[in-house]
Image 1 (spheres, rainbow over the protein chains, first blue to last red):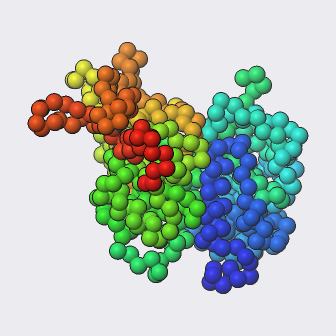
Image 2 (cartoon, helix red, strand yellow):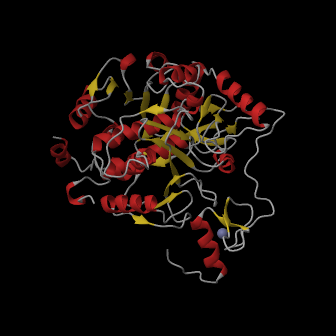
Image 3 (cartoon, chains in turn red, orange):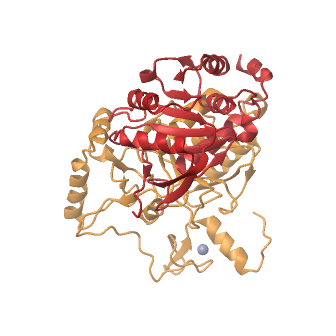
Length: 201
Length: 288
Ligand SMILES: [Zn+2]
């Protein structure tokens, strides 16, 4: 079934999926280090190609997804991976294909699964497509995966999302892991322990 | 021997790989926490455990270069069997040179040459639960981790200390990760524990029988448990050196010369030792 779907796209579930996974792994293990999956993303034509590429890497019928206000993307992800849709507060993977306003963003980040103290891994990963990760806002990151402190220059949207997530002060080990991607196929991983460093700290 | 024509790239089916990959990403996000996963049967001896191999097979790509070591040795039967299996189902290049490898799978040692950020060390773990020595029930240890209720573990270390005058655990010496989770560093010697702290490289731990995956990302705080007045001590090789390559300040195996009864020492990390000797002989274009 899945192999037939392959033909409609250039995406190779075995080799392209492996490459994307390694870039994702590296991004999550090294927050602030920008990775790139454009070679694999190019195999899809749609505007939300980066989300299809990441979805095909992570999803199948064992997981549940929530796609914010984009039925076309939801249908395509389902066709490609057989992953079923569910409500926001029950989904393992959340796909945001458009930049949300502050209120909607807060609604999403507050209500996704944060895991439990016994099972903190049963929490949602939020995957956000933005026009560009790179931008004029300075972001100083610290936490596991970052040596001392790392400065990255990001768009105001990326900074807004990370700041908002951290302001919710979800007690570790509960939390929400963020993955940003953009039209150029860049990846930025911001797992739950990544903090924004105070200036001069 | 497996017939690779009838199997996927990297042996595992894509669904299994995806599940292991999702677990790995969660493990990296929650350093030191044991993420459960559905372990698969593999065509390889049970004794070695299959957790590490499943991680390696789930992360490896065609361009990777793999090194496998068992108790410091590239040439042990187990290491050779694993290399053969992975090579047959992926076609990747195999090496003994730890600087050339992109993925190193190991049991019992972390290589002597510090690993880089673009490498991954996969460690095989037989018994992932560090609290098992104080509590046999999985449901109880899980709750202890949930509440960070580690007083039983500290008490056990303290009893050990009063009984033996020092903490007697020689390998699998427990660590505290990011001030939150007590973690079993796998059966590496105490000497290697410090390499986990603020490292450049990503460590992935796999336990096949107990179906757990956990991780230490680069630059993560990993401390060996100790009491303020009794500092953590590692194996001490002061004044000793490798009889083959002359290395000091590395983890050495003690060997008794049967003829003279004298104790001699050799590097435990055979790939490291061979590299040093090849360089000493001026042979710079050696092939492994
Ligand atoms: Zn030596």
